[in-house]
Length: 202
Image (tube, rainbow, N blue to C red; front, side):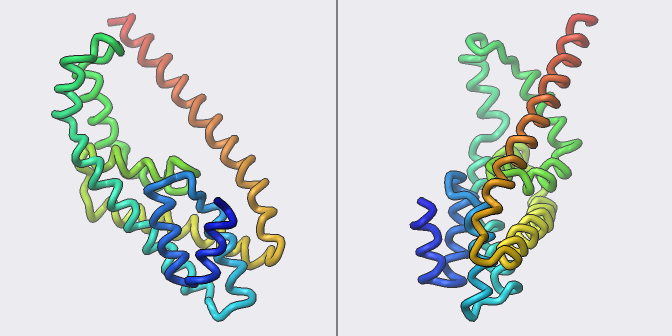
């Protein structure tokens, strides 16, 4: 897949970068960790510019995020509650759990969207719960754009600096992804423990 991605980018230039970043948001197996550094590398021997690559990559990411946000709006809270009414006892979920999660995202979801834009794989999927909770759309776009620009500038810059050795970033990103996932798991474990303790106290 990596060769296919880079070949399209080489052939189509800005359009190829735009398409790959839009697809990366909808189809996470296409990693931005390849698209962005390679896009930076392209600026070292083609007529592409860093500003141009950052711009089209950001546009592609934001449009892909908008599509997933719209998909999330179809999976709204009332529909989830109806599903839980029928099957919740099998997975030990109650409507109150959904409401609690919905309230949490309303309270803290804005910053979650921003920071998750810099976490591989999750950076794409975070748009779905944002749509499900009907997060304020202009705010969603703003935070998505700012977080995406930061992520894009960093990885594209690495591609420019490393040049032909741009693939070295993949090893670093693998370690970064593993570290982030471990932190997320630990946070979820702590939250679960706190939730269980509070439930027992009640």
